[in-house]
Image (cartoon, rainbow over all chains, first blue to last red):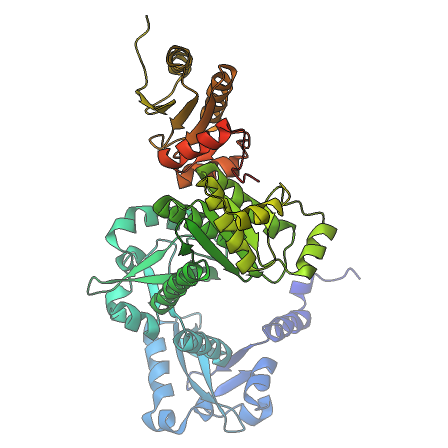
Length: 405
Length: 128
């Protein structure tokens, strides 16, 4: 016998339809009679509600409803409405056999006979607890985020804002939703911002906004404040959204500025130039010499030379922990620059171990004259001045003879 | 006869020259011409070149100064550069322009003393 095509064998057809119903998984399918009593009960309906088919067939479907719904006769009213107007979809609470309630998406469809009269209904239930939970989780997250969040659609119009954003910008939610994001951008940046956001929407990726730029937000009252913004694209059923997390950094900017000011002050303090004698300056160097400090030190010394016309500068390094090649290089540059202006430099405060390590490191200070103590350096400076003034006394001549020029 | 391009002041045996404005190749040649003739004519034994009014001193100017100093020395006089400004000094050191062979002083007064020492053959400038 030739095999029958599946569709023509009534039994195979029923088996197929049942398999198809089972495959719906999270959809419960229930056939009702015209009076709202259960006629057929899919296996998925059993899984969802906990009732077996045998328990429910012949009973009104209102057994799945809440007490309130039953008292209000909601099922009957729904059936009447569907009988009149056709298929309806809605959301509502259903009750499992255990008494547990669950939120459900429901579609109710009338089944009509050949003469057009309604012979029954099909109700399809889908458990919406998960998606409701996800949605409320999303809103919860949004509201509990530490930053102000503004979510923007691909047309740059605001879709969603959280409480923090309302507080930060001083706008109410309903004043923002639907408006372009530029309402939160100070006027002078708006044109540029339109270009940037279009660029971002074309190639969205998680990133901080305006790297290296100072960003400003605009409040409802017209005041501006510094912000930091990070952007992340959200792919959703409603299309591509962009979530912007906005943080008010007024306080941090102020702290940074205060730190910078203090750093400048410390630099200023750490490189004093002292005039100890007519035409003699002393530069006590304390701590490690990095490039920034060395530059400030050189500038400070040369300015003081220009101002005081001092002929000798003593660089005292007793407060420098170690003299390495780099520090020596900085010192030599200072000495050279001073020499170009016509001022002689003397190094002082070289400890025995410093002298050893400098020679071991191969540091060459050229012909820079050096002394162990500040006192010796000062005597040498006076000798240089006296010699220049042509009044070298016997004592200082002895000193300058000892310097081995 | 070329006109004078820089003002030259005479103090005793020393000529004081103040360089100023933009120095280009032509001007430099004329300055060299003027200064060498001035040394020869006046029989001065020293020259101070004041650069305090040059706001920009680059390696070109540094070479010009070295050339003038060499010419002056060839004519038997001493030369020193005075009035290098702090910013200029820092720039020259940062650029690594070799200036070690130049004698420098802070101002004209100290420059005169420096020339005096140079004349005595004493190079006590303390240059490293």
